[in-house]
Image 1: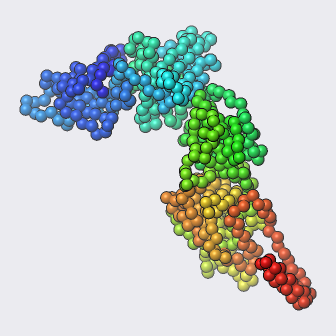
Image 2 (image 1 turned 45 degrees about the horizontal axis):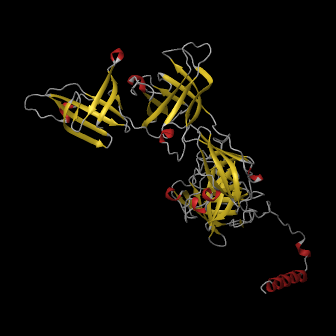
Image 3 (image 1 turned 45 degrees about the vertical axis):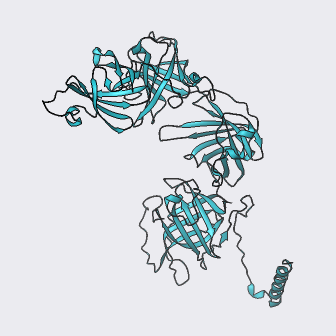
Length: 584
């Protein structure tokens, strides 16, 4: 804090340029420091004594170049009264207008955290003209040069103004700003800069404001004061930004043909991914209003590794990253990404050491956006016991029924997990299922419907665990869920259901809480009845590329009485002989 600081103080038309100097134990015009409080490392409250005139000053350290202060006027205490924060600082309000102070000997900082990218912009200046000035040549450029020995390249950004036809007070000009740092207040991101070519202090320093909910608007101040910036839209100078792709890279390799299409990256907030023969375009939303986009260009391939150039559509830095793919199976592409580097050497970018995780890692998933249901690796009719944070519950799918359902008396209710459709592609889960049958062995409850219906999207085996991805179009939280399953006995299966679409590395077949990435665990026992026609099927996913018969074949034996006992005996002897010979 020691040194000279410039600020604009006062209100209305009486604002004056002020230079404040902090020394080891004093502040100009405030006197000697007699007490200090520091609840945090960037929040200081001082009591100063200037020949009996006491004052309270609160200093908020925003960056190494920016301070904000709030202060009280002169306070005179009664004779013999000891100055304390309670009696000197009682006039200091929590919502008091802050004064921005800029270092007169600023140290520029890297701009990447404040502003990075290339944008076209339209801007408004209500004090100069009405409406919005739009010129395709107007742009803001803030580009970083990794590894540059000239730090100034990474500490500046340029605003190129261009005149608009029919708007007299618009201008042509280029302004180069050096970054002074950034700070956050709630969702607002403030950052300050100075124009080294400007000699007038009140014109030299500027403040800018972005909002996390809508970062395609940028607000700017007209003077050296950040206190009057409340929202980007209501700022004295408003910029409406349009991201510009800064560089074009020529592809050097092709991606597998069956990768092309639209996908969802479950490892990055269900990002939308578009893949063609040479490019991967990934778009994700950090929150409801913002989006981010990266474009990956295939440059070089060796075995399963692809070196990609990564381009940020709203940025100008080109860097390199390695993708390691597993061949596509079902509706799934498994992959992992290495660390980002600025060198384009394949042996560096795609070194096996460049992939994080060491011994504890698993592949991330791309799931096709419009998946085609496949045969489930677990099929049959099971009763289950469940435990977990969010167990399966009874619900009415589709809302209130058109007419009341008949009241059916059940002697026994169970929780049911069934994969009984003709192709065994859909999972039906009923939290409370009526097990009772009539005297003919038929279910008495023919009106109830399953609480959950999911279609199987893909499965595989990894890290000695079997994984299954299902899709529930009625799931409000996440349409895709990850299951970990394992066969515990001839007719017993244990499964766990994930929190979201992401398969957690710690999730196991008996996981049931969020610490392991699961919400519920099922212990299932097969119980197929005579009329269920629901055969059991199990595939642990060791070879997900194996062609599996997508339908269930039902053999109907008619005229069984005509089968001779000698034929049955011959069939049994032949089966035993084949089994015996296969052992040698």
